[in-house]
Length: 270
Image 1 (cartoon, rainbow, N blue to C red):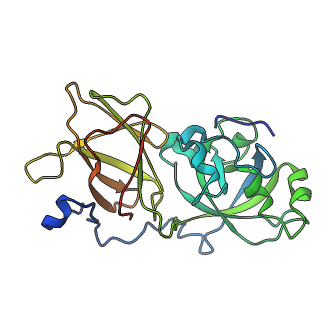
Image 2 (cartoon, one colour):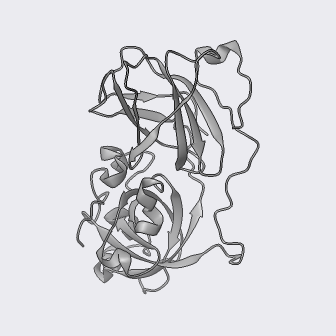
Image 3 (cartoon, rainbow, N blue to C red):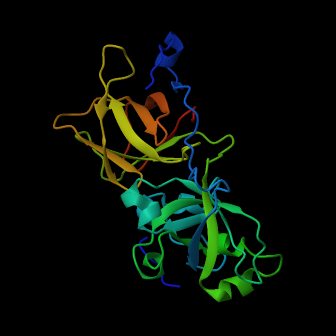
């Protein structure tokens, strides 16, 4: 196959000045499925790209880079059609996918993450299309039938949105290589629950009630940026809002002395 380029806010204790904290609302995870479709399953299509046992592309249009081939993604990823990728807003969303249209299909669902974009070709032939990694496509097959299924090339599938469950994995903040003292750009990954983010705010100079939150702009994929117009003051704290409206505050997530390209792992997740 062709490879496409693919608050609620509660009071915090003094402890939170030094450590990330969860400040989520009591709202439940978003109801992803259409109430007129009780089963939750919707028809779509799937192809695969990259190597037959690989992870599609090295990061793709969400910016996750080589992380897609490692835990917790484990190569179980997909490039989504426009309705799934959503101009980057769909990055990190998790779906269950199953196939029953081929004799090699197991019929059992597997969970994948949107990490890339599939903007043309077969991905525009139906409302929702997953261009899966070779690994994920093969996982839809019966035992010893992965190659047979991959040989089919394109198949009909059913899919549904599900929460992302990254047991033991904390949020990570990957500084963009182009970030500097006047331009903040950071890729946020391993978002548990909703998987995707609808808004990000940053607080400069360490977490404090006297400091204010500044909205960031989605640059591309899972990368968020702030053109401050003045010199930035680390450490940086973040207030993240997921697609269902849950909010998480991560205090002092990026320390003084941060470096472009470095990754900083927090102590929390949704």
